[in-house]
Image (cartoon, rainbow, N blue to C red; front, side, top):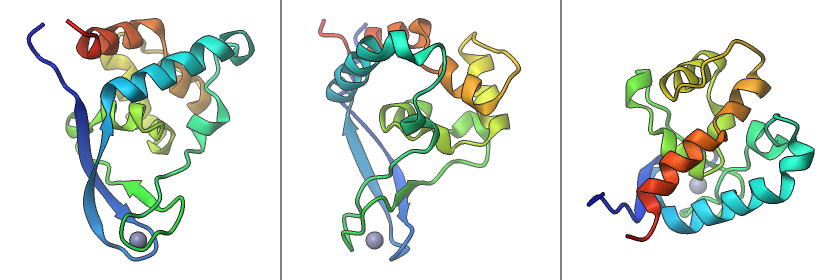
Length: 138
Ligand SMILES: [Zn+2]
């Protein structure tokens, strides 16, 4: 429990100006925000991911200020994908179905189904608990 990640960083590329650069999320802040969202909406989510996760809104570009433009650069090799970065950035929906299946398999939530279903399984309690353990104050 000595690991205390405060910021998670990864590369994004702007859709408009094509600049490639690194952005970071405050892990604890994002986790609290997403956790609160899930708690508030769990009755209406019906085991489905909210559409905001399926069709993510991307961050505003830090260079040209274009909104919804900084897209994550997703590693070609699945095992190098920065899942926590995508999850906390609410950008997990930009993964392709095989990648989501891989993610679910490796978090013990493997199931076949639609992309929506698979996106949803990323918000299962198990994953949140795991992330909570990583970001919780010690
Ligand atoms: Zn830009």
